[in-house]
Image 1 (tube, helix red, strand yellow):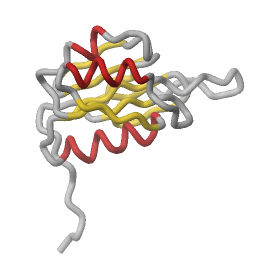
Image 2: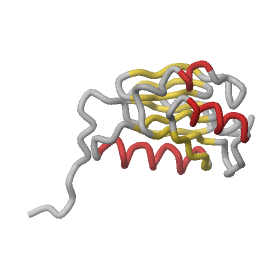
Image 3: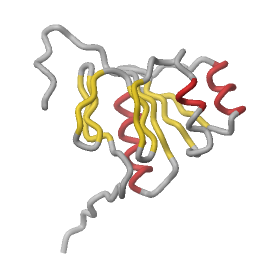
Length: 129
């Protein structure tokens, strides 16, 4: 008898992995910062790129915003703008945001994430395929 239960994401897109400059989402490697919600994903221009986040308001209850390698405060006007659209957001370091998104996604919650990619280091090995 196994005590571990495999996560079931249904048709939703989990974050399988990440590294310097890339994310692996549902088995596909994508370079740069991204947003992911349910069965959709797209590139994201960072904290000033608000249109894609506002477009998620009716689809999600909470949006996790990954601020890069370290946690950083989200701009107050961004938080106010998203909350005015009915979307609660939570800022955290990108690795934490990706993990939290996956856990709540596996529970069937209406969650999404917008993740700033970890900076690339010239000495870092190539992106895995």
